[in-house]
Image (cartoon, rainbow, N blue to C red):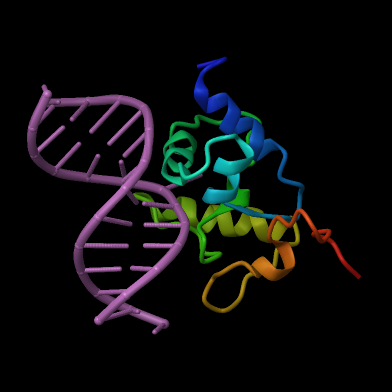
Length: 109
DNA sequence: AGCCTGACTCGGA
DNA sequence: CTCCGAGCCAGGC
């Protein structure tokens, strides 16, 4: 739905740099919807392809949120890895390294 | 209208 | 570390 409230969320997700990830809460804030992390998940669930890098969104623990179809979880991890995002043994993203950070660049030598 | 569900998060036990 | 409860919003019945 173009122009709908979801567009702001999608727009925020598009702003996540390649090789970085953001939490649902951060996306909500970037979209101007503080405290509505859940709505972000809902909006992303409504995605049907398109140019939204949904795989760069993870939960506050840095883990890929469980979803109805586990196949997508694997896909998300694969897409992240393809972008150079490191995942630990527990399958969690190193937020300290790839987490969206206003202060410190995501990419650091 | 109410009730249930879901890609969430936080604080407390 | 894990489990629970409360707050959160949109949709479907």
